[in-house]
Image: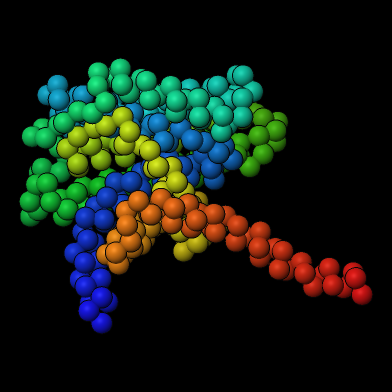
Length: 307
């Protein structure tokens, strides 16, 4: 009873912190979902774009640039990184995963060049979380308000975009690129723009995270991809993925639920080093579940054939 009570108290105490973190990292999950679901373009650039946005934002904050322009600059360089990944795939016929690995590897050196060192402290620099009414600067409430509003605006804009002609063209390229090209859609423009947009959101998450934690680090993206996949799987399992609205909402819902589950594991006493193993096993289970369902469903058919 004491263990259960201690776990619940610890979990409740962690909710504000993990909620603020999940709303920021939801942008990374969104950056994973767009190529994966909208474009049928499995991509690993997010793991490099996330620290890229953080490094650019950190350097600009250290140079005295206002926080919002720093986030916009992070979005811009993230967009360019995604465009490069898509171009490598289209121009040189390199598989999407390999193109993402190449870009992610190169971005590590680029991030070191941008900062000039492996990490950079920006404590004391102004952030987007400083001027929230009725919330103390630097506390979870301010981060929840800013990240939540930012995410809500992005969600509305994306929902509107993917229902326009150009957004429909992007989705058509993901569904069937040959048919889309036959209909006069520019496959290169849709693919490069879509992957670039996804990486821009991942870089935005990195910029917001740097402003939240007060430092930038070239290794801050390690493991973010598997966390994002786990969050995406949870979100899709909860609300589905059959409509554009649900596909766009799944990253935000999944990120919030996933990080609350992580918080619950920590409150229950799971060692932090074991979280990566648990996350990997969870993603494996979520990916294998449809195959197991199909196998179980086909068993009666095999028995009928044998008879």
